[in-house]
Amino acid sequence: MPRAAVLDFETTGLSPDLGDRATEIAVVIVEAGRVVDRYASLKNAGVAIPAYITEFTGITNAMVRAAPPAATVMVDVHKFVGTTPLVAHNASFDRRFWLAELARAGLPAQSPFACTMRLARRLYPNAPDHKLGTLVDLHRLPRSGASHRALADAEMAASLWTRMAEDLRRVHGVAEPTYVLMQRLQTCSRKGVAAFLRREAGT
DNA sequence: TGCCAGGCCCTCTTTAGGGCCTT
Image 1 (cartoon, rainbow, N blue to C red):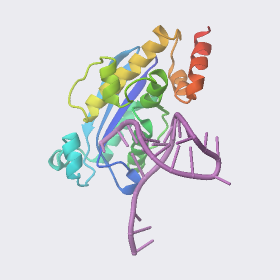
Image 2 (cartoon, rainbow, N blue to C red):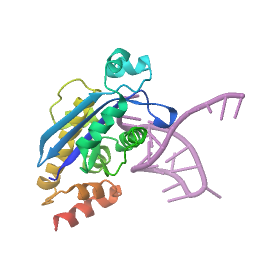
Image 3 (cartoon, rainbow, N blue to C red):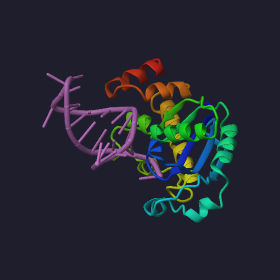
């Protein structure tokens, strides 16, 4: 399995277009099915965190006030990720914040995104739902740290990504489940998944 | 003025609507 950077943001809300900001970021680098590096930091974006968000994530205004400036963190994490392709659970959410936070810091965004939620909907259509926590429990993957904190959620998404690559190999007979293959799989129609997998397995 | 996410994905669809998922 090729190198991938699994990303998770905690934020003040759902939309950077409405002024929401990232309060924490974590990136877990996976390579050959193993975690080989980690980055995590709270970020001081100079905005207040709504009480319901603090209740949800455990991240307080005092915690982000003591954190490095948002731009500093983005410079660091941008360097950390480099050209490694990105992965996130419900990537459309993290991608919007990734682009918005990089733009605010004056940094270019080049990495592609793959989405563990879209992949899971195709590989595990009968799961009770496709929330990250449900899928982690379904596959009995480890839960480390507090849910709804960036590093714990990034670790869980990384475990899920690795598990999906394993399942492509072991269950579906795909010899080499590359990042690009998984990115293509996530855009298959539901009816097209079986044919795609048969084609990739050469059967 | 008042309201406010957005993209995916299914279906009783495509001249649309509503649930899911992220914080």
